[in-house]
Length: 149
Ligand code: HEC
Image 1 (cartoon, rainbow, N blue to C red):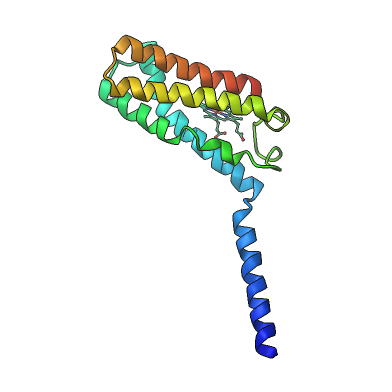
Image 2 (tube, protein in one colour):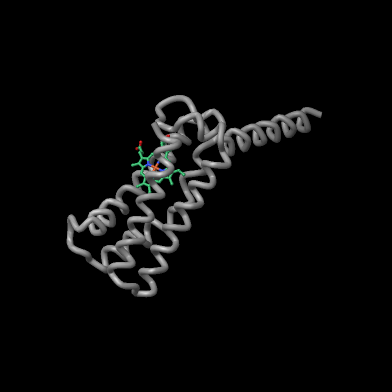
């Protein structure tokens, strides 16, 4: 009897631990999504500068940054969990109030980013690549206008 009780308690403890691990802490979720957005910025910085003519067009660097951006393009959204609308965040309440429009803006960006990576692979003209970088930048801005303080 004693052994069974011990086993039941051990089983319960395991279940509780597993539950605690799977449900993310809102503060961790905020840190996580901000971290991914910093990765966006790291990659978009030189791309934007090339599109604007602030630095010379460098096909190799453009390819590397565009490919990296596309690889992480769908990562931030899972960080916008319930309860993470408050705290150290610039996300507007609209993210949670109007989730469909937010998801739509995320999808617009992902498509623009995928198209840019595709143009690079296809060795498209500098003109087309620069124009698509502009489209990606627009999709960042469109979402920030509606969902970021
Ligand atoms: C679908 C919406 C959406 C798209 C698309 C989007 N962002 Fe954001 N971004 C946000 C929101 C919301 C925040 C605020 C996050 C927070 O503070 O919790 C944010 C925050 C940021 C931050 C600040 C992170 C920090 O450390 O506080 C940077 C930098 C950023 N975005 C860059 C970009 C770039 C560059 C792109 C495009 C390549 C982009 N974002 C695309 C919604 C978006």
